[in-house]
Amino acid sequence: MNEHYDDRYFDVINAIEEAKHVFFHGAGIMDMFSGRDRRELRIGETGFGAGRVLVSLMDFLEDSGMSDLAITYNSVELHPMPAERMESILDGFRAEVGPLIDQLVREYRSLDITRQGWQRMKLTRPFGSLTLNLRVGEALDMVRELTAPCDAWFLDGHGPKKNPAMWRHELLLAVGEKTVKGGTCATYTVAGEVRRGLADAGFSVVQRPGFGGKKAVLRGIKQ
Ligand SMILES: C[S@@+](CC[C@H](N)C(=O)[O-])C[C@H]1O[C@@H](n2cnc3c(N)ncnc32)[C@H](O)[C@@H]1O
Image (tube, rainbow, N blue to C red; front, side, top):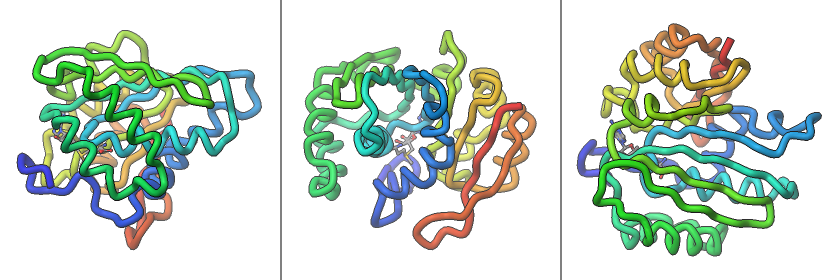
């Protein structure tokens, strides 16, 4: 439970599979590699939390059998948690992704999460490398500070009712500005203000089937 927002970090039983459905299929991550000799991908995430999406992404890429990928993963967290808490939250997925959790927690421990600003860690895996650029601080600052636009965004900032700040117009407009043409965003909320905000940010927004009892989720494609 995140005491700042009276909300859980993720609220489905199969949170690894949920991340794959909502974020990676939602943002079309595999399509970004297929048919091209492309190996680099820049991803943005709003709400780093316990790193469940990051661990799920590494598992997803590992399953793809691809190699030599260079993933840049930009994320932000206003209330970073200690490594011990991260480990205990991710513990439920140990059977599925134990070695990935161990590696993430080990590297995360070396970051200074008490300091506002950017922290970096590099994870090397059979699929290639993933560089995490974690901005400790406010999401809008992180998006504005990015020097290169992202190919895909995972919007994971607690629901708009619990945490409207993570879905405010200004922030979604900034996300649109920091997305390449044809790039994507994905999220689990289909709330009207989020759809309108993403449309104003230049995304064409479509609903897709949901996961784990949720009827629908969102995909946006930057026009
Ligand atoms: C749903 S959780 C993210 C879960 C995370 N993606 C994971 O995989 O574990 C949302 C996160 O956004 C963070 N957050 C909320 N408001 C924020 C803001 N304005 N700027 C940056 N982070 C924020 C919360 O502290 C929380 O950790």
